[in-house]
Length: 161
Image 1 (cartoon, rainbow, N blue to C red):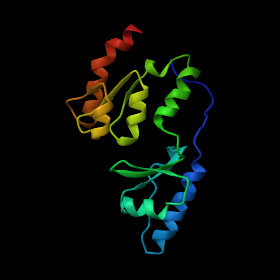
Image 2 (cartoon, rainbow, N blue to C red; image 1 turned 180 degrees about the vertical axis):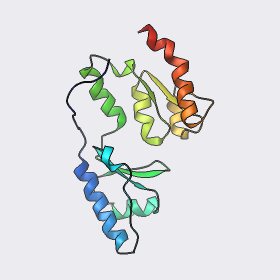
Image 3 (cartoon, helix red, strand yellow; image 1 turned 90 degrees about the vertical axis):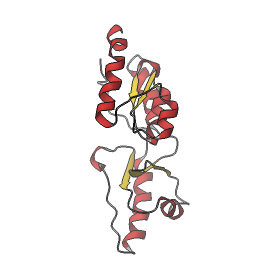
Image 4 (tube, rainbow, N blue to C red; image 1 turned 45 degrees about the vertical axis):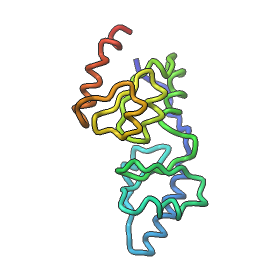
């Protein structure tokens, strides 16, 4: 089973783009270049490397209608009210499913909402403390090994469905 519908984007990357443009102008004036991360595969948000102080970023963008998420690795910019959890809540019914029919695995603070929305939420041993607080299962292993551990733990649940 999979989703074969048309790509639908609920977020507004224009909001994120404007915020990043404001930041880039500010930092270029200081001789600092900000690099976008994985911009090709981002449809609702933008992210920059965490090479500038997050508090300063928030101060610079205080008047922008953008939600700023510091994952510890990157600084993400998105329209307020959009998250991986809201995406799952919108997608599941289009597949004839409920969010509780899904297993979600995440390790960062921007995964908390999808871990809450899914029927089973998993995080890895090196996951953010907030993902650990909401996950049904925290793997003993870190990174990719923890991901595989979580899938193995719940594979019989999904085979039964």
